[in-house]
Image (cartoon, rainbow, N blue to C red; front, side):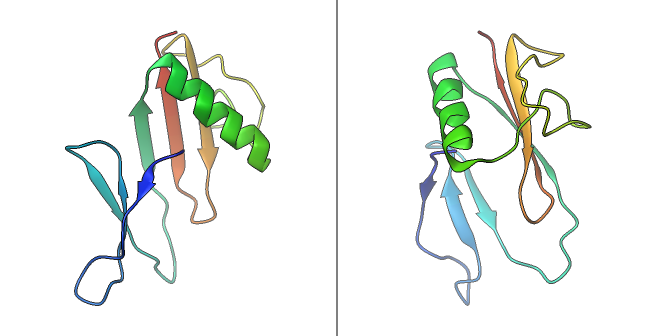
Length: 99
C-alpha cells in the first residue's frame, strides 16, 4: 500500500515494522499457521487512487465486499469508494475513501 518499511525490530529482529503515519507503526511477524486478521484503513482520495493503482499493477485481486475480495469493484457499502484484498497469510485489508 506504499507504506514505509522500517528495519527489522524485536529482540531477534523477527518483527517487520511498517509505518502507517507518525503515530502508528504496524509490526508484522511470520507464524507457522496464520489465522488472518482484518485491517481497515481510512485514506484520502489521492491515497486511495495510489493504492488501487499499485494493486492493479501487481495483479492483486480486490473487491467491494469482504465476502467478495476478488470481484474487481470499489463500490464499498459504507463509503464512496472502498476495497478489500487478501494477502498470503489470509489477512483481509480494507481501504476506504470518502470520495
